[in-house]
Amino acid sequence: MQNTTDTRDLRLAAMNLLARREHSRLELAQKLRRRFGEGGLLDEVLDALAMEGLQSDARFAESFLRQRVERGYGPLRVRQEMRERGLDEGAINQAERTLSPDWDALAEQVYQRKYASSPVGDNREKARRARFLQSRGFHHQSFRHLLDA
Image 1: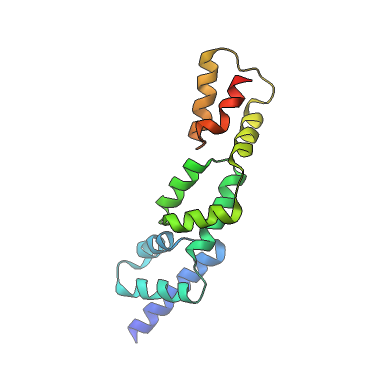
Image 2: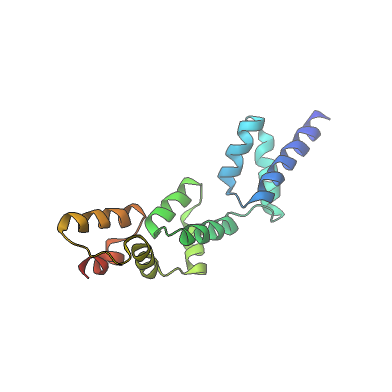
């Protein structure tokens, strides 16, 4: 009887988390372990949720990518954050193929929003702006032309 109650509580907690937002399997497992501890039931519940389509790493990857693009983050940073959340390269690549963000245009939007009409100036300022865009996760090729203007 205890096993059934534990499974039900674990499943309910997982579904409550998923009702708020998409979670990767790794994120969900980490949150549930903090509350329920280690155990074989966790994998069973997570497998069942995935089989029922309630938890999906592919769906999470698309949602996460969309959110990060809207916030102005580049491909290097987004990919790293996705890996940290337990997504494999296949899920990451599929999300990028599905959404196909224009990283160069996004880099330009981020640059314009931050530096609007102020001229680049000297090399120190150019380096500072390059570091900013690199910290956002953009490839140098995506913004090099913006610094030369």
